[in-house]
Image 1 (cartoon, rainbow, N blue to C red):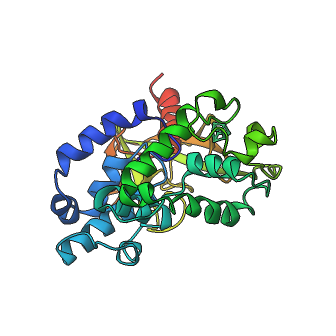
Image 2: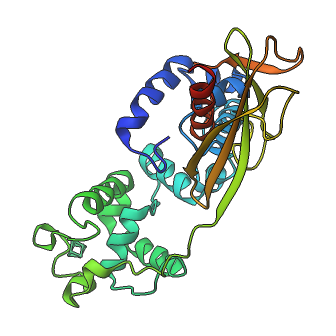
Length: 292
Ligand code: SF4
């Protein structure tokens, strides 16, 4: 849940999620649509699908695998998460290389290869930190200590080297280039896309919705239709914009009210429909026009 967001935003989602699915078995038994509804507003919806599939896989196995290779076979578990579970939950010598550890390792070993191409070299260097016998004996503590070092001392712009236990053994600090590491390739401009969202309300303020295809952008989530779902007096409700990781999106919003929605249409109360943030923005634009 914490990907690309902050703890304060996630806490209410996390609490609600755990109340609804207190065990892995509860999560595994829940319908996917229900899980996606709980996730609505957090973004990166593939994580919700993977979490659900992972819960089903772990339930079928009877427990989490206790080795890196077995963990990697679970849906949604990549190298970082597998290493984090292995080290922190099971005490297996493994190092989950997140942005903090990447920064610390690039500085300690003075690696100047720019990201993202330099990531494998930094990862190999980070793995050398795990050669220390103390790190291998307590891999979970070691990983979390490195997370904390990166978050609190070896910070991106102004590392507090005087307080660092690696001062004296840090190539980046010795060379006076620590604050510039890890180097990064210049960013390319984010592509821009456009589209239209249609807000169709009935007399009871239910809104017509669609279910997105299971894979791809907002996969499996409820959404507003991208084309007119019925003949109606469509009016311009302005436009909204949203920034995704890989592109920016501008959506023109069209809105209309009818007495009743088409009989077979998906629907939900407009005020509480569990929608992704971009769709909630578009729905609110439509509501502003139709309810003023
Ligand atoms: S000495 Fe400075 S640059 Fe090197 S790891 Fe410590 S805080 Fe980071």
